[in-house]
Image (cartoon, rainbow, N blue to C red):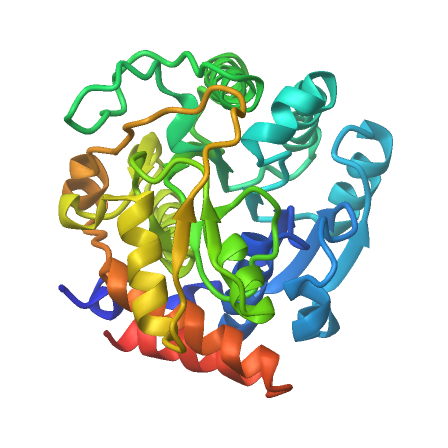
Length: 357
């Protein structure tokens, strides 16, 4: 695949003040490490990590950043931290990210994903020195899903089905409104990024298939798969992390680059959950196997993929690792962790490999 190193220079972030919400989560911890390695001045704002164990504390990534534990719903606290950080770039990853949790806790999900976005954009709006670049990370599930065979484009209707997906659709609409109402002067460039299902080392969330695989492998048990025929745009966590950083950089340099971007794998890497688990079993080895056990859970989409033509044509971004490579990197990280190895070194190694691919 085309080398992103020629298209994106992470040295851009050296000395830049970056405000990162959701830094204690799986994707946020990887983002923190990339930014720290690039020399950015990072302030993170988030709840305590949502799982135990968790990548944020296992890696010790907080040692080289300002990490603030807080609730994105608490505007007054958020604003104090935000104003103190005086950021040039804002990356909004904080969210309630699990579909099933959305069904169990819909009010909390909407408060976090919708009002959290409002609170953050209010901080941006009221900062005396304008923020240069804002990227709000949502999800591929923001679209009205017609279960059709082609990928959704950025112009397609936003209307997520379940509370999680719908709250992210609402977050998109909030962002659009703030952009039109308060940032039309171009001083602050604002984009949203809609990424697919991410996998990689350090994800311990419940109700996600690769963490389920890893837990089963650790116990020597068969993997239980709820919906093996569902198709999702699976990708390694570094794919969207680097895409978000590219969007933030490009619109910082040229505000006409701001917009709404899908971030997903190529069609050849949009696989069924059953195929994904087959790959995991093959890469893991040791006779790993899985079983189909539908548990009668709530509605989830069966077929979903993204058309990423816009980000490829506009910014020159392309995915780097195919789905098998993404699984291999996930397994490599996991075995380092299980063997008590140097997790931070493994993260740095994978980041370097990704940038050089």
